[in-house]
Image 1: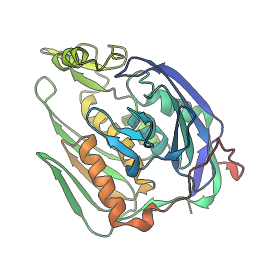
Image 2: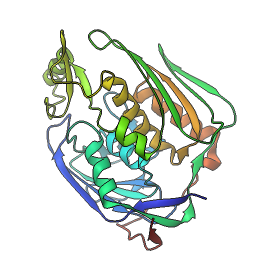
Image 3: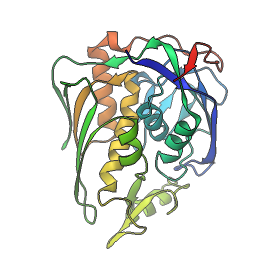
Image 4: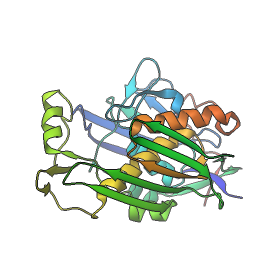
Length: 294
């Protein structure tokens, strides 16, 4: 039986927020078994990182506790979730998670270097009984039971030139995530970036933390020919972390984004409430007293 895991030690990050351009600080803190992934903003009370806490999905996934919000959580959630961290407290100062290099690799690398501790509780898996289809315009997500109880993701996108159609098929685990997904950078078109800047957004964006496409192609070299769909998969994994348990089912995503992912996760949690049960988040930074080195 797989056991729950938490971080062996606290990890700290600092940088700028992608949209605000403001200083942003983040700490990933070990948490007891059964806690799940929780968020604390500017020293306030912790709250669960689940679909119940989603307040905005327009340009990023934004979580809130009713008084404060934090933007662009999907990259750090993606890394924590994919590397097998079941329980952690995500402390954020500054209203936005640091964008770092625009991918999840700095988070994933730091988590792997720090190591995980096994805890005295079975790992929670989110299983479904029947297939379901969710749509949003021309975007769709299909979920179906997994014959192997694993999380397989197939993602297809079709963007305007020069990106075009791209496809990714991956059976997700920590190794495949780090080698195939984590380094894929957030992306956009040059004309979109200019419009965002004019609207007061993307103030922290640069060619050091984003993959930007001009009319003739990317302004910096691609890491893979299909780096865009790999980043879309990275985002989906972060959004699906809001299930509160590991997805033991197959996912087919077609042109989907944060809004549809939030809709899918909320619907699954409502349809399978027993899969979403969890302990209350910690009221203060907790030591993983029940943890042992894996």
